[in-house]
Image 1 (cartoon, rainbow, N blue to C red):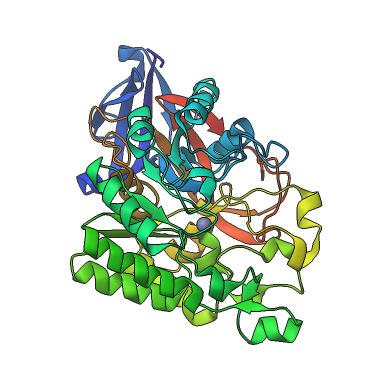
Image 2 (cartoon, rainbow, N blue to C red):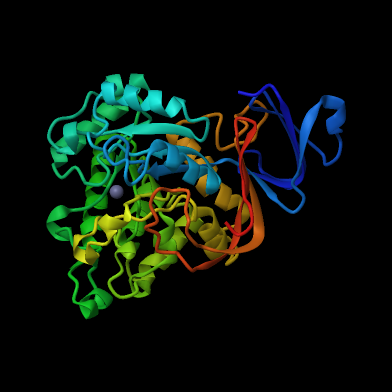
Length: 435
Ligand SMILES: [Zn+2]
């Protein structure tokens, strides 16, 4: 933590937690927000602060991505905590929640402590962990929720795979409620999806590739909503991709079920019709769906049925993705493009206002994760800030800060990008050129 002061002047400060969207100066001190002032009301010299001129930029509470895979331990050729961290900062992301489907998975305090030791050496971003619901992600025996929660995990999930046994999922929900945590559910009925790489529909059929139906997702969403109702527990639905799932979550919220949900940029930008040939960089789970599903995900983000934008950043080295659409693993990277995609495809198209964007990418994730001093720029909160150039045009191109480059957006022109990333009052990333 720095004792320095940083005064960010003349930016457009957008902070839905204070219903603020106006030109303001903001002073950070000792890693926290010290004050918010009318423009030019404070001279940096008089208070011995470094000045950052944010004229023309948006000043947002730091972005929070509650769904990333950093691959440590066991997948260091795909990503490490260190390269994942750089990728986050380049994307304007100041806090992440790392998923536990590593090798071995994070299903014990021993592995949690090993990861925490490693992540403490990384200055930024803030890295939090989710632990496995079941030992070895096998879907059979619950991991030790209490000890893992006491050790600092924020949520439980077997992400990458579903908990197929409904009785185990019921117990997991009950247990998480008892200890004040929550469950993140990867919704997929494996008996319906059968590991198939694309969405079941005409585009996959024309390519001669087997598809998984939307129902493999929605049937599990339905089960988990029912179990959340039964247990009174909070379930968070990961990477919602199907229109029917969005509608089911919308109705569940109306009925007062404790559900939150997220969508990934690839699911609000791309449909199954955008997949060039059999390109494995367009293979992810859940798959790119039909155009009406993309529109439904956008609507869900607009009306708040889908609380958060989360990337499901899933790096895989080239040799793995070179195994063809059937043999390659599921997943795409996302941290470095999520903000640009959301600005281009949601904000500039008037689907989300800038305020709503901040809700989806910062405030709601902070609330869901229980991070009270994040997702906001209220006085005293953490000095995590994302500075955005909303009009800057750029083209998605490697190299990426991520160790992997399995990105379906390469070559796409975007409008709006990260200008600088600040964590705990320190500038930890500045964009340069077209990179
Ligand atoms: Zn998943």
